[in-house]
Image (tube, rainbow, N blue to C red; front, side):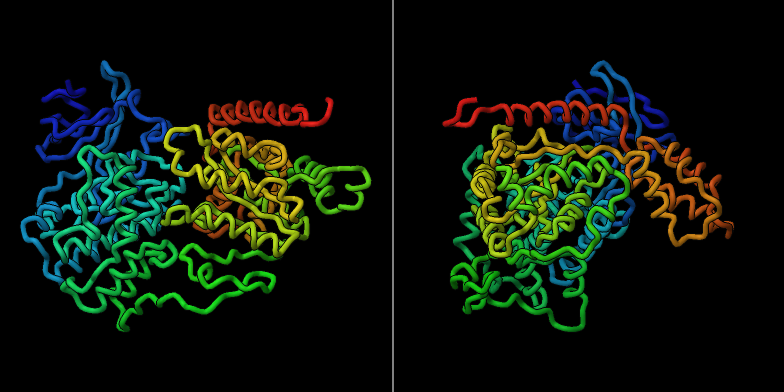
Length: 602
């Protein structure tokens, strides 16, 4: 039985009929008081997976994203709200009632689309995706297929992406949405291991262009009846690998074929980086250049050792940027005196002064995990830590290790540590470490177990090779427990919210170079308790906007008003969650220290 009933009034809207439903969502046709039609999508909160709801605001992500978007090639948000029914709390939102023809139906009816029509639809699709990707933070659609593109009748066929149910920030290993209903034929290979971003959207858009020009998806194949997405993905990856895409039968000019060749490249590194590059090839006066064939010559390893031709030509071969930092180390960090003192005395001293460490038989740590609430500067601290040591360093994001090839990420991890050893002593900084080494016992993590195993192997006593690892995460409880054992990541350090002194310095830093009156930074620090770095940056910018509008200096009064009008990004419940995580993590570290070593009597 549906949760809403025909004729039920929800504010100024009346439910007309149920269109479709699944476990936790239902879509209806609704009308307003003037009988204008809309789509109404309702979410039963207690049935929804936690990852689909923003833990900080309590709002369904799809509603939040839809509310913030406004583009002619995306379905239009109209209204939203919450109501209580027998099932509990229901969140809903309304969009424009689109009518016309799905692109999938047009392709099925026409077989193939004329090149001009296909390119016009493709161009509009790219513009909608570019708008998504330019949001802050960047969003990706993650479900671009002909069935999600409506050629709207009321606007003479303007293409609209009509389903925002999979929109999210970039995902690298752990998805923030359900993937079971995604069409693998329009999905890039890296999405099969949980990497969804701008480049995977571009692959899907190019797959749609290919379908418009040929009547079918690229690498179209039949799957066993009832096969799940993971099984389909495995079969499709093998099929793609063994059957290079043939563009000879595509009825298109050379420019379009080059776009398809680059957009549908299986290697993540060979594909378009952003939509702007696709549009440049599509609209530019010059003919786009086809991807260059792999060179046969050998390349150089760091340290002067030649790589083999096979390794140099590998689609997963990457030279990671490892160099010395150019900043001022801990001097660039506002406040956090206790944290800086701890890192200096307990970590940096041991790894820098090897002679004294050997004299006192101190074992240098292999690595350190910086964890805590988002927005507290963990990645910044990691970079400044590397500068403070004076070692070479590299900042590695999870996307840097992504690969569309089987065991490709595993190969990249091994390459990274090999290059780091050649440039030792070196600090490797891994951002969002939980995406790289997720708990292998968690559901869906079986696809990355080989990558986690490779990390475990490389982390074992890596200090002996002159490598120190600094990892950052908001969710240390999602990391595989084996990674946090002694001999791998030895130290777990909690990075709290900015303290009073840190907030004071942040205000002064952000106000520097702006026209200011007499400012009481201590007072501002007191008023902004619980604020993170981005909150303070927002407050100062908001105050500057107010002052600029009336062409006056930024006064203490304007700043205090901006503070009072800005709520902290992190709620008390969220902070308590991180305090609970901190207690659990400190327990893990104590257990590691207490664990007896084999061959020794405790």
